[in-house]
Length: 148
Image (cartoon, rainbow, N blue to C red; front, side, top):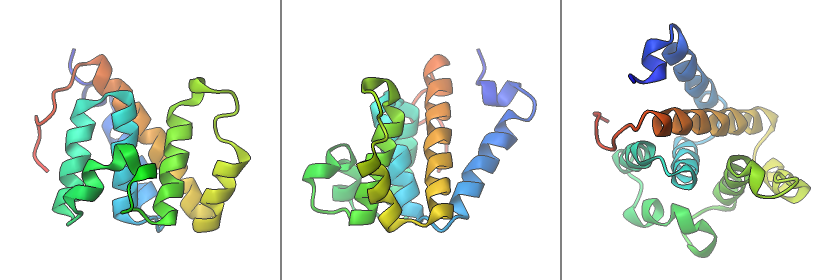
């Protein structure tokens, strides 16, 4: 089938509006893209993994940072704020993996680095990329089939 965001009236505009809203909250562009990359890695969405890695490269991020997002805990290239955003991303993306996935510790760590508006932006961004990943997986979207 064609991509649902393309065939459901208003869906693409709504999804793009969510991304734009998250981007206006003051969370750095690179952090949002790393969040999108990490969630996409977890969800196995090759389309989004490729897309967000390309966006990070285009924004000037190093190959080391892009290549090690999946192993961010063991890599030295991430700030404490980025680590908090990536931990929140993993917890929200893997809701079913453990009870109480967004622990107080994860939330408090994120809250030390981001204000309420920025936390809201992260939550919207994480929710949005998870929707994109699921739509792409269901319709077998191919990596590389776009322009950045």
